[in-house]
Image (cartoon, rainbow, N blue to C red; front, side, top):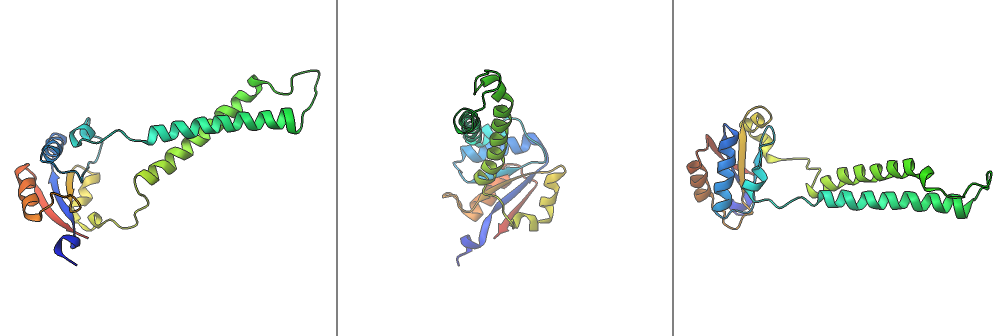
Length: 179
């Protein structure tokens, strides 16, 4: 196993949202593709500074929501009009207004489940072990510190150059993370 295989990446610590924002911009402009930021709260436009593409999750939720609504309507029409029709006082065997509440609920159910499971798939979860959790300073990410990590899987990754680059982005600490 080579040294690069033992290294997960290089982690840099910052004190403020503006520092992590500018560090992400500089990292993207330097040509790095495999890097991530860790913040204690959402930083406005950080995704644009990192050059991230829009998420596919809204389209997944929309598709499954529409599928759930169509499933609910078709099942109720089939059940009440074809499989087991009741003639009650001459009313139609299927009536759209009667089906709206159930259709709405099934649409919401399918949308919510697809959001949860789609997010887990897109985020490659669950991860049972993350080497970053072994770094003592990284515990501050849930409190008041901001972190940027350039991963060793990046084609431009060279440990010494990345450490120097992150130090030039005004990082407070720079740590090499081992896998």
